[in-house]
Length: 321
Ligand SMILES: NC(=O)c1ccc[n+]([C@@H]2O[C@H](COP(=O)([O-])OP(=O)(O)OC[C@H]3O[C@@H](n4cnc5c(N)ncnc54)[C@H](OP(=O)(O)O)[C@@H]3O)[C@@H](O)[C@H]2O)c1
Image (cartoon, rainbow, N blue to C red; front, side, top):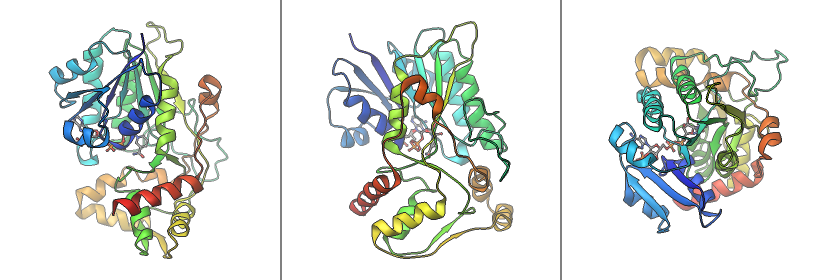
């Protein structure tokens, strides 16, 4: 018998990419998704092999139906920053519903949660050993969700990923790095653009999760401490990355980063700007990570370099316009 998988958030960027990876694997595996809209999911995945459970991740009855009889859960839900507290609520609900079964939860972490690496501090890249010390309220919520899952009685693996880009990734930070250059317009980014930064192609982000799924490693129920991996790609900057997008799109334009004082000013007048400011430390500080541990543990390495990934993403945005 194959493995029974559940993907939550399967209409989202990462959840959809995980479903694609699972469809490439063993045909005996069973794939179930948890989504709010069956119709939207079927538009992308008409494959009848996938079982759909519809529901809201914040409703215990819905979550119970979704996790019944599964071996692995890829928990790929995301919430808008203004409602980010639901992230912790949903992690706690998953912990309560899964209880002490042997279900392995694979959870996508990010870079927000680590201690700030001061510029030129000479510190090595972020690794699974780096201290978790979230510098903002929103980052603290994400760190608490990681911790709630990691300390659960079931095995958990948190995989910290750089910022995603690729077909289907349309969040407010990444979309303007593609659709403005494609339209031949300038880019105004809400943070400095010359600090080392990493992006990961969405297919590689999904492969990082699937590569850790089938063996939870040695997680004794007593230690109550899940596994943690970091994924590194290739350090770049927002500036160099976006310059590549202009080159691929064969257009030209200027890339400017907003100074911190301007955002501080904006935050006085807009709650939305205030909440976005809470994650911008990942652009004002070096958040590059090392993938040495995940490579050694499960052999995972990203396959898509920026040239190939940006070319495919530009083609997708051009087709989606
Ligand atoms: N984006 C990045 O660059 C990045 C980097 C590192 C880690 N991560 C982590 O990766 C995970 C997924 O992020 P993403 O960018 O792929 O998210 P996304 O594209 O915004 O997708 C979010 C998904 O969550 C679903 N969802 C939201 N509220 C729900 C609810 N109440 N009930 C059921 N489903 C709900 C959405 O469904 P609808 O389609 O119905 O709205 C959608 O399928 C998050 O944990 C995030 O922290 C993201």
